Length: 182
Length: 371
Image 1 (cartoon, rainbow over the protein chains, first blue to last red):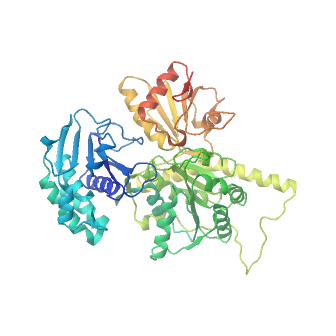
Image 2: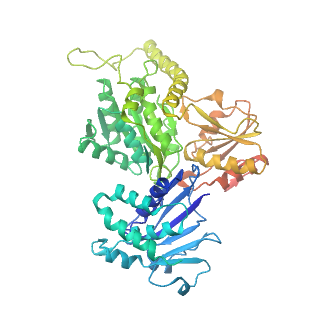
Image 3: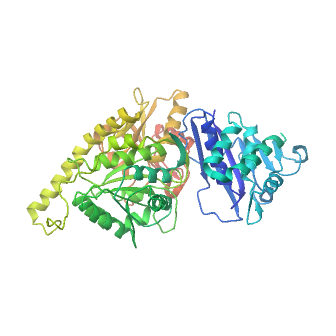
């Protein structure tokens, strides 16, 4: 089964890293096919950005862009004023949002899951230039929504990628995993 | 060990494991992360190579040529305008019969300025005497770089080799790649043993003026080497398969046995076409895929079928699709499509649509002008 995910955020929030962490964790959890890629173009800090991930139990041969995702992950709800994040989302698709609101408070014609990743990032001191980086807690929440990826595999992927900085990110991911409201 | 990384980082890793003595490089999007990663390897002491930061791609190739002439194993990487600036030196490497290995990350040519993929940059180097491989996955990038050295350095071949793949679609996309042990790579790829070298202790001259008849002999021997390369590429691809479990050749056939139509595609488009073939087969359509891996030498004899659909992510103005025109005239009924130039997204659904159009007897620029 192929799952396609789009991450929406702003340049500097780590959307591409989130996609890569999910791909690595998926492989470590036994999925044969994984992909992670940025939006193909120039990006800059603060501007809306997209990143993509594909996960499958079989090798993936698709190389084209993701146009009909199964899940969209929103790192910064501020971009929703400018971008239609539901574009192409499958009818039974899921929207995972970084917000302190509950899913029932959000009026979108899709299944919504929410997690306050910003607070979790601040609490765990995951800050760059004083600004909370929400990508790692969001991957924790996403693992809870996705079938077939283990939280332990996500933590391993963080150790590989961040080295000694992995601890606080792994802790934040676990907190978000537990806190996400579906 | 299986790792997940971008094709550019994988290309750098493969180059490192081939243990080049000299790397000469100049950055250009979307190739830059290859030579950045190689610079890190050298800086950290993980790769014992001379890393030359040159002032242009023309100089990068010139440095590789000079180093290869002293018997060194060399590597460089480029894209698009960088490759075009190298053009003169590409001919030089070919005619001097120096087995330089290069990665080209396919990127459209400007203006209008565009950093996305099409294959015009490398296909335009078709007459330079370089062996050309096109990879469809990050695994194939790794495997092809390793094989490229062994093929290029084969004493019967001695030609430079280029491994190309789509900018961004592969270069910046992470995929799983099985990376063999260094010791296994060393077993597969022995040291480069040149037939002659430039050596100050034992001076010879090379590349001097050549009268007409010997010049024609040089050209003849190059053509013979290219013809022989077809067999060597298959043999080394098979040897690689026995050692590492993944076999390669000139062309990969996919579900062609009973096919009425076969699609011909290269690079990332060939992977996407596999999905299209599976989808069409499920609907009962008898269709297969010929994935063209080696553009030079061109495997004419392997590219024959009653009805063929050729998808070109390239254009020769005034002629048409480059691959289409290479195949045309082989007796097959051929439908040609130009698609995906400058990085226009081509999905398997588009390829299915091209198949349907070809069945109606149509071809042309997809999707804007098909008739």
